[in-house]
Amino acid sequence: MFIDRADIFVKAGDGGDGSNSFCKIKGLKKRQDGGDGGKGGNIVLVADKNVQTLLDFHFRKHFRADKGSNGSGNNRTGANAVDCIIRLPLGTIVRDRYEDITYCDLKESGQSVVLIKGGLAGRGNSKFKQATYGDPGEEKEITLELKLIADVGIIGCPNAGKSSLISRISKAKSKVADYPFTTKTPILGVVKLSDERSFVICDIPGLIEGAHNGKGLGDDFLRHVERTRVLIHMIDMAGVDGRNPAEDFASINNELKLYNPELVRRPQVIAVNKMDVSEARENLKEFKKHVRKTVYPISCVTGEGIKELLEAVYKKL
Ligand SMILES: Nc1nc2c(ncn2[C@@H]2O[C@H](COP(=O)(O)OP(=O)(O)OP(=O)(O)O)[C@@H](O)[C@H]2O)c(=O)[nH]1
Ligand SMILES: [Mg+2]
Image 1 (cartoon, rainbow, N blue to C red):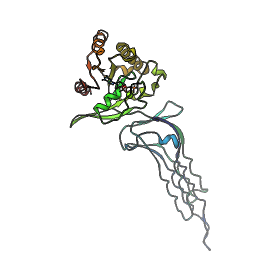
Image 2 (cartoon, protein in one colour):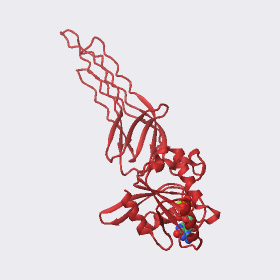
Image 3 (cartoon, helix red, strand yellow):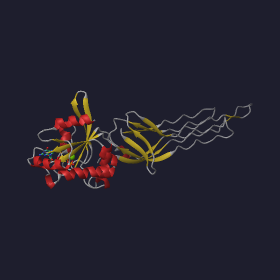
Image 4 (spheres, protein in one colour):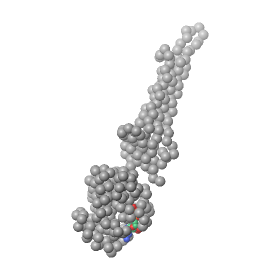
């Protein structure tokens, strides 16, 4: 299972308490010498490129920073607690679980954010009449949401050949099979056109009508589409299973629009696949009557047209 959303509870450390201490030395007046407490630990979120998924947060859901140490006699200040560091994959968006608040969007490796600060320390009685307690550390329930970041997303109906394409043009291994919804999780690959020209591509599980409402594998993956710059819209031109390529094209675009109107405006390169199948030529003629756009005929079996397709994609990037 690809876990890309997790709800967790975080609590910053309480401040250490101030000390109520009295120094009693024979012959001298009693003196107050209680030290301050230490500060509570912060909750710090760090984007770490070595963390790939939110899987760990499925098993561990509570994170608490330590309490600052209490102050003690002889004016000794308690130690500040260390921060609780939570390492998250790049591309994680951190939101409040209940309210519409976004705390941060971790985009760069090493980026760190103090989500909540530890409680302030209590004062010792050396400064005040009476020592005070440290402040409690704040707590929050947050939702972590991971959106993959790829330059290019491959979208299309189930069985269009999306996994065949990514497997052919990158080292990514995405299972290819002749039944719908073979791909259940987004797969990332790197496409290298030449030494200095490369991009990251993502095979997005098949979309169907109603996906924006959770149908098929649902709208989970439309969220990943949001984080790509260019889309390869792949169409099965062989019309396997009686599919109508022009209808497929329209229905996927409609799903994008219903999910987020901005998504239909994202640059699309149209790849018409399975051109090695004899019906495809005829279907393409028909398709072009309905969709008056530049299309790239390809075959993931013979490799025909793939180089041209990738060059067009790179140009759009
Ligand atoms: N003849 C022919 N068959 C192809 C071509 N590309 C893919 N196929 C076949 O089409 C079927 C589906 O291919 P996949 O790559 O798994 O399709 P997908 O779009 O990833 O499908 P889902 O993951 O289920 O959404 C497989 O049986 C492939 O062998 C092609 O260019 N020509
Ligand atoms: Mg697939």
